Image (cartoon, rainbow, N blue to C red):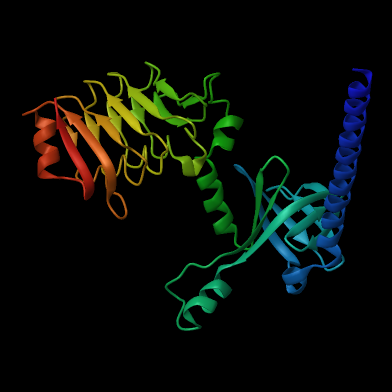
Length: 314
């Protein structure tokens, strides 16, 4: 018995030693990769970013100047200096002071020229920008054009980060504005019923492309909801939706390009726009549950979704 314990003890020591070696090796590898990104700049060696950039941090825009001596100066809209430090570019890496960040540089004109040639590009709005990503996944954008930066600020006001900053998310993960519009759901529940104060569902509220409802498979929509906007469930992971009587309007593409397999509709909806389920390549295995002979069933039969779809009359 003692001999067996000794063997087990030796085995534990060997396993511990192997784990320590692996951890040390991993640490050295990570440190080497970080150092290597700046010593071997790779494809980013030829990128020149000296000049003026318009920085976008969620809903805030500032002006950044990068000079040839790797000096970084940031000022607010009034010209007041916010930050003065150093910067360095690496291979998909950006060092701001002592902080190392991931980086991606985008020149849309060059990308289009490489794809379709150098013909007349006047019909295209092509941007030059780069963005950094910190360890938490937060993106900071830098644009050459102030207009492009302003457009990004507008886009950012529809993101989870902005809703978080504005304090709109409740403890369950629902972001609801003062008018009762559900802007986003970022909770992790498999099945949810929307809160009673919700009167409408906004575009992309359940979109996985916006990191929303990633683990949610079933959503019940209460009678308080009156309108489901276009794209509300677009690119969503939700598989089952139950809509209670009371919903007055469903806009086109409300459930388009999603993983929806079952939807339960009430007998009557005042306004239903064609293309509610429009999906590239057609829907796959979608079952639409509704009452036989109802206004909703008649509408679906007159405007059937393209693809593999079945009307289940109940």
